[in-house]
Length: 270
Image 1 (tube, one colour):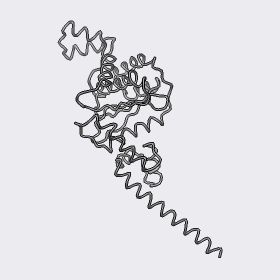
Image 2: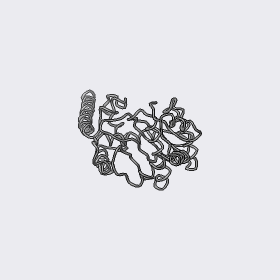
Image 3: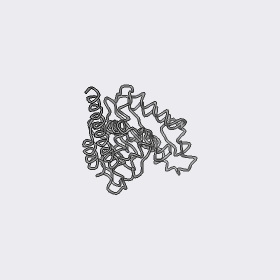
Image 4: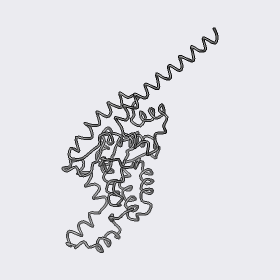
């Protein structure tokens, strides 16, 4: 009777495990239809354990079950893609990219943030951009020092996003994709997102700004962030000098302007 009882207990446990495994297999099939699983494998997030991988996916997408994942995907379609009707966008990839950015930001623990320090931050960043040596590492360290979480994600197919700004806990956050390995693109994208933080996220910590490439007509928020980036990267003094004197902007003249003690970012790889 003792052996029979143990057998029945073991049999029940095996049956329960099989039921759970079959359920997880069904969940994983649904996950594969909703997110780019191959990307997460390539980036080292998934380790091949079905149970652990499912839990990690739920954690990355900030949900507790497969229904939450599907709801988040449906909501993201209306939230993100109405801005990009003319672009070729993979909806699964866009949902994954933005969710991964927020997940990585949540994992970062950095200094406190103060809006009063933004001008000083921009000055320090311009020096880093001008020197253009170990630029990404120095810019990341500087942003974290001033309380802005900074995340760089590998690009995904049909995900033409340059930058993403949002709040993560008590810190504003910036995520970018290095789609163009040029210092001017890198610098402008960061300053543009800082513009969103300074001008827009200050007023509403619930909003998010996902900036696509070549979206045609821009709304007022994007135009304001563009103007902020332009003013922080190239001083008004330099712009006025060029306009007033009608300089012919040869390469030598641009380099000369760039070497003056004001802001200017030259286009080159980094």
